[in-house]
Image (cartoon, rainbow, N blue to C red; front, side, top):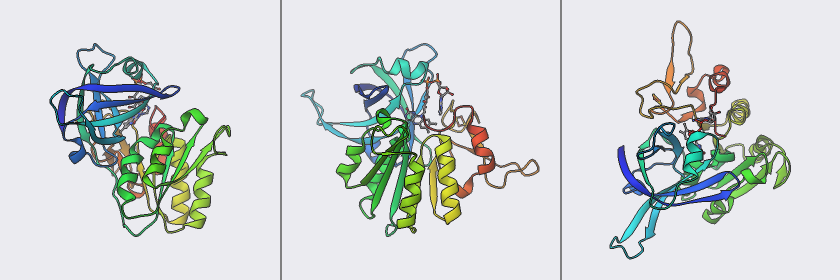
Length: 284
Ligand SMILES: Cc1cc2nc3c(=O)[nH]c(=O)nc-3n(C[C@H](O)[C@H](O)[C@H](O)COP(=O)(O)OP(=O)(O)OC[C@H]3O[C@@H](n4cnc5c(N)ncnc54)[C@H](O)[C@@H]3O)c2cc1C
Ligand code: FES
């Protein structure tokens, strides 16, 4: 994990309220694991822009534009504008200076290469699933179930298709794909592929429903949680969630930033999780 003072390569709106930012990020292709995140800060800005956590969507190389560098190594983050920090971010341009602390956290376990994999993404919760799909597709059959409220929440699905991932889209208002919740699609896919393991990131009610479906069937599930974070490195304890077996006599807390953000479902206390995250946890 390093703090990089670096620059933005591009920052574009890809759907109303959703942006893709490409940032110069040496060494990330080698270091970043699927499911890890960065703490992002605009240099020299005054509060409110403290560091904000964002999943790493993609890490790669691009040709340089005759500036003497052979290739530029970058990461992409995708973000939804929800508050003061992301409002400032949407105004940033190529060449603006930013700081990245990362890569941070525990990412996904790739699991048994022979098992089928189902990825479930809700809205911006799709972000950590792309690098995961890139890895899984090398050895496994991968299906992506992508859900959103409207068609505006469905982003980058064609990029997953280009990897060879089978994709299924659902929207609550029926404006794209099947009308309804992504969890209905998950039920059907698990009926058809009962041995598949599931990886999920999305709003907390979606994660909670996915957990119930998988628990009933004994399906292996990993979830990426999005607790509120201040430091991102295990120092402030602002991101703790209760772990499985937690009680007053035997308190068991897990730091989402350091011990997560990815957890196996059985590591967490699901009776308390929705309540713990009601202050804002879960992807938007
Ligand atoms: C590990 C991790 C990965 C994340 N990856 C992404 C990503 O790839 N793309 C993306 O758009 N967002 C992601 N988030 C959420 C992102 O960090 C917040 O949306 C962002 O910090 C909001 O900043 P803001 O200043 O614009 O909003 P604020 O003004 O701080 O808050 C606006 C609203 O968003 C809620 N909020 C703030 N932070 C979070 C959070 N961490 N989780 C849930 N709700 C929050 C607040 O409760 C409030 O209701 C991730 C969060 C974590 C912890
Ligand atoms: S954000 Fe500070 S301990 Fe996790």
